[in-house]
Image (cartoon, rainbow over all chains, first blue to last red; front, side, top):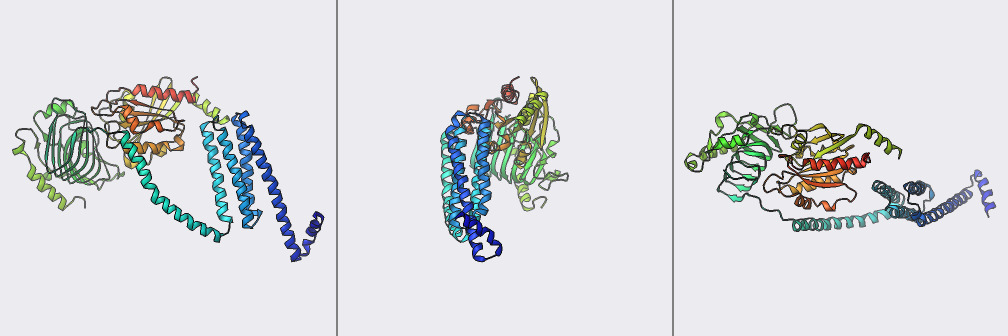
Length: 377
Length: 185
């Protein structure tokens, strides 16, 4: 029979269509047989290798086997374009490749206990790359009609997965997190509306202090703090004695702050005024329509507190604002210096006479004016 | 393994270590670097960009890259990942509200392939502030126990203000890097 085939090969040059067809089918058969042989030898080799692997605990012997297998799989992948056009044949061909890829994966897994972690990772990466390219070839070479049907099914699945996944992961993340750790409540003013909140730390050592979720409140803090966190304030006035560490202000709107600190960071603030004394340059980020002026707070004994906090010198840094959202040489449009004639003069928060001395009315009317005509607009 | 031995030889000659300091803004990265170097820490502005300090520590030369932690510039951290031997993650232990942010940013960082070989020192800073969480508590919040088993890491409580804990942390970091790169020659 083989002789016959060979004579047929010789006759193809006569361009007889019948013979040509025969010739093609013969070539196909031959290449399939060759491929089968290769596949068989490959599986045989990988079998013998995986069984013998425990005896060769060396990275280099692993790598030589690994790269052999990898090369043969790669060449099979390349060959798949020329093997056959028949979908069923292609399918079984791809299945074989897939099997040898999982053999490769098994080889990595079996040797992972002595391989350096980087090698394990890179080997697994190679495996997943091979899988990916097989997948790609699969979707490319197997006829489209069949595939579009598959696609639909896939899409449905993915939608379901999308809907399903977030709540699951949320539960997983949120629940154990909270159960694992209860954050203790630090000293502070929280969740108040329309109140005057007063705290005096004179003579007592205080750590961090938090002011958060206030609406239309006035906050007066007398004495020194180590750190101050301000979060989510609306329409508030905040007067604070010297802070020896840093102040972090986030998400405030239409507020007035009078504070002295070594460092001040302002994030996501809108339409607010800051009367500051800072040893370093204050910074703003994601902030707009804010204005700056110099510190103007007083209470009985503030001089001493300022001195102890190393904040008795006016550095003038209140005007040297860095805008992290405006990294250019020209002035940022997000902040400006508060004009002298619009500034509050002195705010006295001394415990006794503060009531009558307060400049609340001017602050209020000033704020309204600010809202009506925001600066830099 | 030829390349590795060449790298080892070069590094041995220079005895250099590249250390990357990152963490949220206001965690005290710059203050820590200045404190270690014995410099004045009373006037430090939030870092716009980065600072590099070269410090001789024991018999090694540390190149410390202190990169700003403001949200806007965190996306630039990646530019400093290459060839990092040691990673220092600084946490403001008194900033309870942003610990979630802190955990998220750290998790993202540790996914980075280029940092996979770096030793990780977590500094639970501001321990001097009343109300700050202890290093153990910070470790729990950051879920450090769940970290990749191949990572060399340690958490140390410190105060950049008093200097406490800084040497302990850096001693561990330098020893750990040395034992990996120089095989403790």
